[in-house]
Image (cartoon, rainbow, N blue to C red):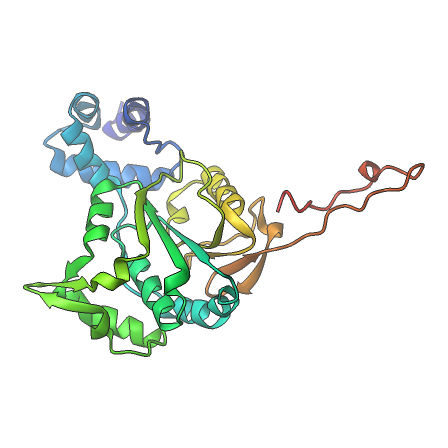
Length: 300
């Protein structure tokens, strides 16, 4: 048997071992993503074969933490895809401004740049004091970096350009300061952000949110897991809440696509659709069950 064939046996065994031992479920991640991340970790693990990592993962928690760090996707930046933030500023926040309080969930927040970007946007629109931001990820090390809000100084030029293209109205330097060879976000931006561990694969509904952002996370899941997570987002939203996905992600072909209407298709911003309940049928008439049922409001 070729080595590549053996590895196709080893990979699912390793994934199952991680799930059984730690509860982290990568079984429904896209197979190409799983294989790529495992092979990448193998090169730095000191092991010759994938199967050699399994007993170490089972018995060495520090080794597992290294594996989890390598497996996590933490590629992000402040105001990434500026047009998305322009859409939020111009089409979403004016609606949320009419609410007495605002609850926002950033799912898969990685090292926190997106959370702070949104905090800046809300501050500039005068909404931050009545907003609670929940920023979640399954990677505790990434969450620790997010709470610190400290990033490489050489990123500040990119962050500044993104901020300006997103319609920023203040000097970006108002929101951060240089510290040795790093930049740190100003403390006031942290005041309404709660960073917490939440696993989209295994954890449940996360409150009743007015806006959920989950950008460039679903692309790493297979179709079944994408459907599960999208249903989780629907069930976590206010009846007219907003959902923002990544540029390569869509609701098309998902089981819940009829539950949403596009606010800006290019920016991947959607709003939960309000669909009326079925009418009550008068006694003696043909039962409504004999007709094709539209989605009920409870389903959407």
